[in-house]
Length: 378
Ligand SMILES: Nc1ncnc2c1ncn2[C@@H]1O[C@H](COP(=O)(O)OP(=O)(O)OP(=O)(O)O)[C@@H](O)[C@H]1O
Image (cartoon, rainbow, N blue to C red):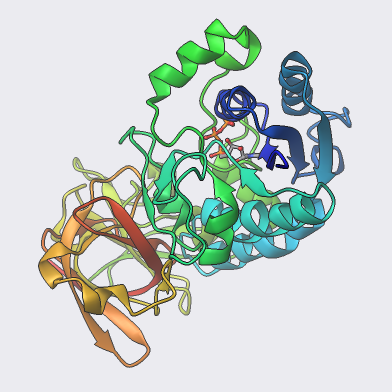
């Protein structure tokens, strides 16, 4: 019988290194493939055509004695992830590029190359998530739907970013780390001699923003300044700004933009892309920062069968709007093509563009929809 071939996405980090090791240990025919998604030379932040991540990924593959290849998705990433990200920031919307990156790049372009060029049976990544088919697809059943569940390490669970993957993509995917804690992953990396990747700091935030560069400076390089006013809800002007893309709902407004001082600080409660106004409130726990009802577009569901919101009792549906927040119970109501969501606990800093991801009480990730508008606050 042919040994199944698994292509593993090698980022140069510890999670994919340990995933590759576990796959090899289970006897799969493993190939490591590194994606280049951002052109640092073109951007002027590096003179080197080969990044440190790429050489770290290659070294791990050499150590494991598995083939290593590099594929270039700079164009796809730019068009499908980065331009959409910029367009949304220009409109004052807070999108999560990692979700688009998974949807368009890791589980789409990358899967395609893995199958067509490398003849992969499965495609693995070091995501912290599990499925009903098992971490190594050992329980797969072609006639059944595959279901997505949180990874065992609640602090690392990445199902939030996987909420738009499809049945077809998940059925080819493997998550070898799904049942491990991050501490165990680091221990395996040290044991196996992957010291270089084991000591790397956690990759934070958005891959294309260099670690040293501040996010707002990065955005300024791509979005034209456009001045506007900072106002209170009653219309009173308290400052000026150079572009709504610099603001995020719930974040404190830098004093350099303000003509007034407040002991409690001013926080962004609304971003009006039509007038260019930033609406501020005073204090980090102002009621205007807590959404009690918001509208999302029709969610994309991981299951192809019935709408899961209809098949689960409302008391069992949980939602989360940020990866690190614990899911909260919510009520959902269909209104035309969209859904309105009423969280049982008001959610602070809910922002248009973010994803609202649904879970069951049994840690199953059902899918998610993009937040369109905040309908009510406290
Ligand atoms: N440039 C890349 N090339 C190939 N695969 C990648 C790349 N970036 C990420 N991946 C894959 O996607 C998984 C999740 O990526 P994420 O950016 O969330 O990194 P992470 O959890 O810090 O993992 P790692 O420690 O492997 O970098 C990685 O474990 C890896 O399998």
